[in-house]
Length: 88
Image (cartoon, rainbow, N blue to C red; front, top):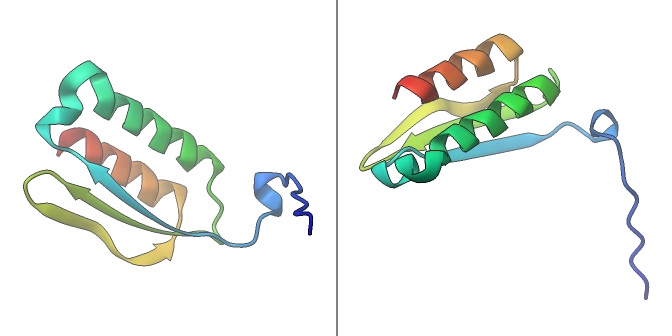
């Protein structure tokens, strides 16, 4: 049996339900790891669609649930989360 994989453009994908769990501990300060994570999250914000759902948890020695339930991914809400990530 052969598995055939087709590359689909992001906008052709069915609605996504994504959970981000982001390490915000001191070890992420090494080599600007947290900056890389934030840059990747900002790129995601530019691609996300209103039909996609996102939940977000940030943790260090405790966990903070930023979006407790999967919610429609709006650019404004995700930008707020990105700012929260930068200041947490």
